[in-house]
Amino acid sequence: MTEAAELPQAPEAARTVFGDFYPEAVRYAELLADAGVKRGLIGPREVPRLWERHMLNCAVLSEVVPEGVSVCDVGSGAGLPGIPLALVRPDLKITLLEPLLRRTNFLQEVVELLGLDHVTVVRGRAEEVLGTLPPVHVVTARAVAPLDRLAGWGVPLLRPYGEMLALKGDTAEEELKSSRAALSKLGVVETSVLHVGEGLVDPLSTVVRVEVGESPGGVRFAAKRAKAARTSRSRRRR
Image (cartoon, rainbow, N blue to C red; front, side, top):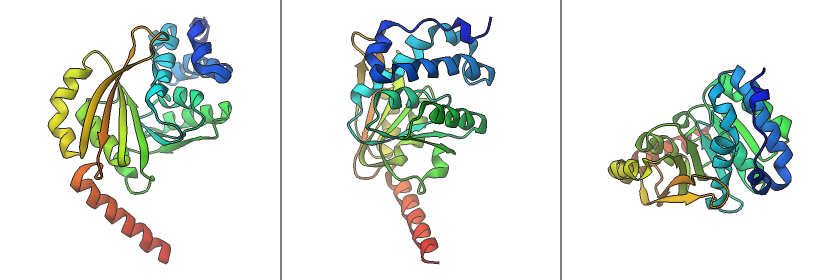
């Protein structure tokens, strides 16, 4: 029996969440269960709970993403939450940022196969693309790192008054509390813990929202961005 054969039938909630893109969502789940497992992007034990724990858990993040904004999914991995978000929100312009080649190859294949014209795959680390990737309205992340470290990567990629939305587990409140000093240094002005997916997922998805002021990343990253902008202008003049 293949890993793909172990993928359970999509729950009824999937039709509600993905709507017109339900067939594409099913195809993506099949790819995760087959190629995703074979390439080591997702554990075989996750296949039976792909829909509830991964697909729907990520897709309901759309409830708190503003309309028509730019999004960067940091450490996208196998495309979670970026691809489920892209399937339910064609109004967004999404960048899947991932440093590992085998993962970016998979992501590019998925994007092309599903016809996600509003999604771009970029290979690199957050700190490497700072200054070359245009600042975004929203940064998303899931199970990438502890909140303070995750914010250090994601917050500098935001435009002024943007926000980072991190899918977290039961320890979200504690993580947020212990990270407040680090977040403040990064220019964060507002934080909150949200629960999304009412009537669609059980348990609800927990999201830590981190909002920045006019200096995303704080003073150090503002200087780094300014230097990158000057270098870019200098190159264009040549």
